[in-house]
Image (cartoon, rainbow, N blue to C red; front, side, top):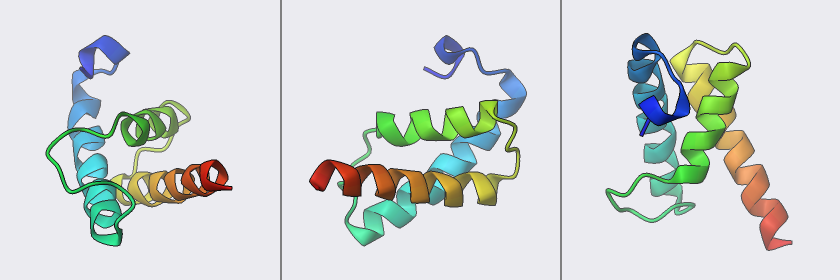
Length: 77
């Protein structure tokens, strides 16, 4: 899945760690269902942030959470 998106192998761990942090928070807050299925929207947000030059996994996760929640709020309105 990540190879199809053009990510280098060195970034796979960064994306994986950032996704795990963000998804854990969003699952606990009830924003996404508690399943083993990857949330494509959250993954896309993290990949875009990485492509924009963010390489710190905590900042990646935090920014992804903020964007995910903002998009969810906009969809609910």
